[in-house]
Image (cartoon, rainbow, N blue to C red; front, side, top):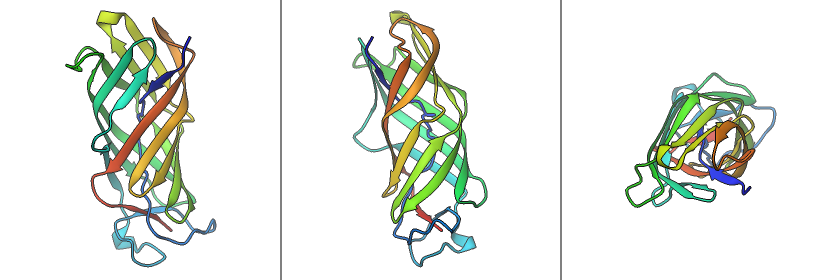
Length: 201
């Protein structure tokens, strides 16, 4: 059976999560933080960001490919950064996928979050980072096609850079379902912050 491309997030969050990058020095000895300003090597406490909002990048869609193509036109992720550490803990508060389906109306499928994920954000270099989901489950349902699949998003990785968060064929595990539900799925998503944010120390 073919592998699927899916947007989980939880997408992900999404995603969900938070992937933002700025021009900073990379040092493994410093804590990771999310900053609303790009000036300086370190982020002042007043400029540190806790609440993060991500959406699908303009002009892109979430795409699930199996024997049937499924697209989602909208994806919103809200998250909170929890404190400071080399691995910055991220708590996904909301993942909302809209406009999902197999035809032009994008209305015959739904993707819901059964378990909101926790994640770690690691600064890997100047303008670079990696978000790793530690938990999270998503469910895809297309009743008219008999599709009902549950995906475990633990281990999904997002590359971070230039105010974007990208999952490129990141592997997820299918936990149970019927019809077009392979043992493993591939997650593709390109998210951007609603405001410019930077990964700093």
